[in-house]
Image (cartoon, rainbow, N blue to C red; front, side, top):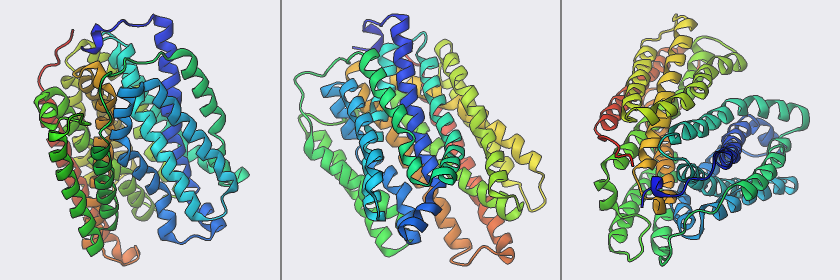
Length: 464
């Protein structure tokens, strides 16, 4: 049974549901990016070394990746509203627990729990929206949800810096709690429970295999190119191969890989998402280095310039989602891939004397491209699967993004190790830095061209 065969709630109920989900999808990325600004203060207060501090954002992403698929499957079995509310509650409690933290290691555990909470929220949020909106307005609703994510990422650094300066780093964790409580209340009142997949069981063996494989791959990539990193990465890839084999023989699998690949629209959407996020994630890191080292901008000046991309995405994503309700989603999505790739080609031409106008205009074009891609791609993917599998489908979309983030950044780290090494970035290293950035930008452009190909080849979406 497809989503459009389900009874659709009335307009007020649908929009209140959307508002409830958007508050949560704003909070998660806002909290993630806000904590990154507070890292120096956390390091000073908890006397933590650089390696441990680097794991503060990493543990959050690890929890989100490793538990994403099991959380989505549980949501399909137990009810998406229940799992969503449990995730919101876990996020609130783990944020509150920061008041008793006096060491970096318990903080890392809390960040892991917040990542798991994020998996429960993002693995169900888009699925809930997809279920309650029909094909005439689903794209716009998913676009508003995507816009709330970008708005959270945009506001996070500003809010995190302000809170850290006024009340210390603890405030960065505590400030979202009132909105988290409001979200829990709104979802409890306005969101109805989803259709539950009766007669099925949880595949615990597959869940453990997936969690271990994702953890090994994640940690391995973060440790590349060391021997430990290589071994863990190989173990993670082998674990995923074992997971795929086990899923094909399990009586109640998390996913049937062959069935997934047979759904061309969904499978190509997953591929496109993986490639586009693999290109997008390293962008902020690379531009931050270029603007601060080569262009000699202050951190705040560089941050303000880089906000241009996110601001355009916030505006474009809902409009692109609405457009994908009227047109084939692959049309705006593929156009978005091409615009995003053109932006990387423009960035690859930067040198030490390039104008900041070129950077700003390019970022706005890339914001337009990514905004055109994200909502239509999500709309195509989630509109192509049965309602009883929306939780797993939503989780797979989020996993594709997270894996794209990890692998995209791993390639950039490899380039920096190869071309610059362990040397400090001093003026004499600037030519090597520019060389590394130019190659990385071109590699990202290749990712986007591959994404454009898979996006177009997904075929037509069969609407009810």
